[in-house]
Amino acid sequence: MLAARETSASVVHEVKTLVLSRHPVIAVETAEEDRVRTMLASVGADLRVPVFEWSITRGLVGASGERPVYGTEDPQKLLGNMAGLTVEAIFLLKDFARHLTAPFMIRELRELADRFARPGRLSTVVLCGEGMALPKEIESLALRYELGLPDRDEYRRTIA
Image (cartoon, rainbow, N blue to C red; front, side):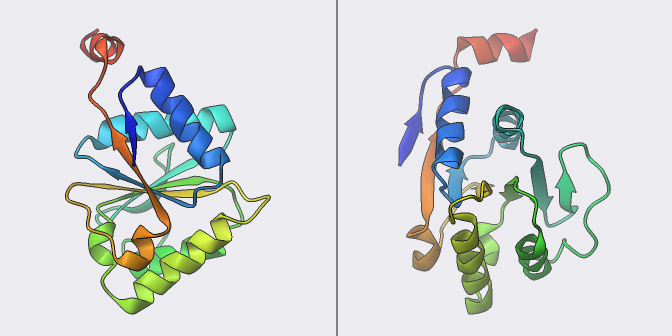
């Protein structure tokens, strides 16, 4: 597990390095979805790749907030749609770990992770949520990243 305790610029740099290192699944156990979203937006901008965000209530939506991809509120359909995408991207999946109980879902995510880890492909799944228990098959693929407490600069930007 990597711990992020430095400045927010350092956190962005660390996560950017993980994406560039072809880590296909990054698990961030936190309730601070806004911080994760902001961090990934910076990483995506630096790498010039889009960031997509998923929740069970909205489905898969691009960073600009356009309409969700049809049917992606269903976690199984989400993975199928992601497998069919040719775009390189960062995918933030909120509270997704709880849907990884069925063997089909585990296998689908493993195959997606394998595809994302291939050379020449710059795509990553970021799982975000509280109390994230991952199946052992996914745990072995995922890199756990601890989002540390905000530093003074982050607090100042939030308050300003």
